Amino acid sequence: MTQVGSVEASTTSRTGRIDAVDLARGIALIGMMLVHIGPYWTERNPPVGHIVAGGRAAPLFALLAGVALSLVHDRDPRGAGSTRATAIRAALLIALGLGLGSLHDMPVFVILAFYGLLIVVALPFRRLSTRALLVLAAAWAVAAPVLVLWARISHEPVVAGQAELSDLKHPGELLMELLVWGTYPAAVWFAYVLVGLAVGRLDLDRAAVAWRLVRDGATLLAVTLLAGLFLIRTERVHDTDDLGWRLLFAEHFWPFEPAGWNDLLLVGSHTSTPLNVLSAIGSAVLAVGLCALVLRIPWARIGLTPFRAAGAMTLTLYTVHVLWAWRMRVDYMDAHDGRWDTGSHRDWLLQVVVLCLGAALWQRFIGKGPLEWLVRRLSVWGRRSRA
Image (cartoon, rainbow, N blue to C red; front, side, top):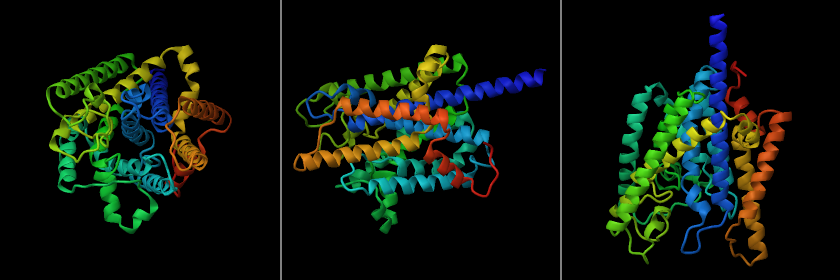
């Protein structure tokens, strides 16, 4: 009787973990969609969507890559969680990312190639203890941005575009773009994956664990934002027309200035500085904790089903979103003499409703997302794997 109860408790706990991760992935996807097709920052003040999701949705996505690595390895170490299967999955993600990035006038910096590289690099680190992962992540979040900034200063001017298939002609340059020069530099973003590996070992179905994630994430987020605000007000970070508090959300390509050591004082989205990375870790951990807590409420679990379904098939939905955003951009440019649009909440909301409801219906009547099913089948080809 005790053994049966233990197995049931373990299964329930594992299911709770997966549901919380799926919901967090769904939130990350929706946030990335808001940044991509919501109102862009063209006025003096950043739009609310940029403040909330800019530079935070994508790091949450990366942190959840580490969580997924832990979960899959724990559930199926000889099948989908094996080194071989993970490497194949990463290669497929890189190929898909480069393919999407090759589309002409692609308006989205596609993350999949960076994502694939990150999970390959993470493979040897799955053996580390939770404490070792967190200590290494903290050190990485501080040291890696300094080294990457040094590389950028030493190689000015650095122009990093969309990672695409044609870049395979120069594999060394492509690797440097994915590691250092790109929008999601894997050399820095690996800190998110390390934290995710540690979070993936936690029992997110326990309220105490979820509350601890909320507390620690909120504290780290608040401390980094306050530190960034203090530095903005006391140091001359950039020669600008007094952006002030807005520098907390400014991206690395705005202001348009050469990289300099005072960039280390920035905390804005995608600046890949120590404060930025630690702040994004804080918001990601906070989001995971909140997702775990809200799913403890029965009516919330039911109401959030479309978002959990979206999180269970983010590869498919992200691909559809990228293609949809690309088609919208091309159509707009054709109708407006080559001018780019400035984004809208209407387009974002339409995609959210269509994709999340579509995911819920697909999961209810079919099961796994089509790309998720295909990638899994290819990654475990010739091997026995748990369902």
